[in-house]
Image 1 (cartoon, helix red, strand yellow):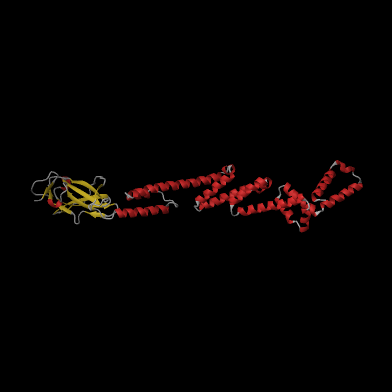
Image 2 (cartoon, rainbow, N blue to C red):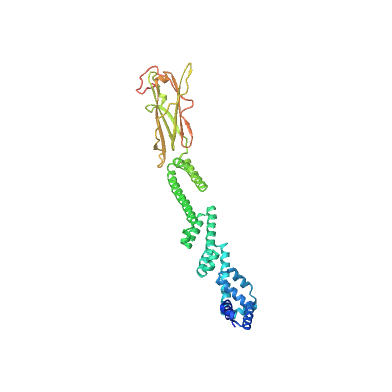
Length: 385
């Protein structure tokens, strides 16, 4: 008798034995049935077939593994005689092989494991429910994405998480951590995009006004991610500034009408008006003027009057170069009669350019002595004859 028919006979006898009619059996019949049940219960081949059948009915993977492990050559030959039992053996082998393959992929290729797990769940929903392969694969993918993010491999992490969300559909969208990780990555990408745009603007400005570009750059926050890049931009801007601002500034003190001080004296009864002019090949950032009186009895304290704020004016370069320019700053300085008291004066000026270089108008300082005779100019200066 085939194994399938033996199992059916065993079921029928067990059902009958549990029913009310079993009590009506004659003693001889009862003894015969008990003997048959005992024989069937002790049949190892039949027991193996029942283990496979029970393993599939209960979705018990461990039971199927035990059944496969208990098969000897003789039992296998016997089970192959029963088509149903033979199918159970083949199905159990395929199922356990699939499970083992998914388990291996969970430790290496999580996306492949998830795809196999989804296919497995479609064909074996009862087994899949207990194994939770999809959830385990999704969790492993998220863990991998987290490690990639920590290593600043954001593009790889983003690709992985998007693939996870695509594969899991609604299940992935319901997982707050997936969306949170993606939002975090997108925020970093937006920051990078904003940084790129800002740096492009700074670099464009740097070709004409590198010092202004450097000021903007210095105000930017330096993060671990941006620090190296900003340092490279800063180095480039400094090279541009050095190229534009090569020379030191010049500064001179003239008479109010622009003539040389060597040709004038001042009226001790009037205010003294001077012209301070500074030039640089790039930009003059500050000009300072100093003076003090002196006579035969000594000298006064150095006075630094406040100069007005004047924006630099770009003038044509002295060499006539087509793209060259010279920045010039000019101030009028007045030393009131009440301040100089008609005494002799010393004065000098200092100019500083964008590169921090400082120039002085004269060393030793200029000196002016009050005029004793002659016609005084309207602005308080008189030309020497």
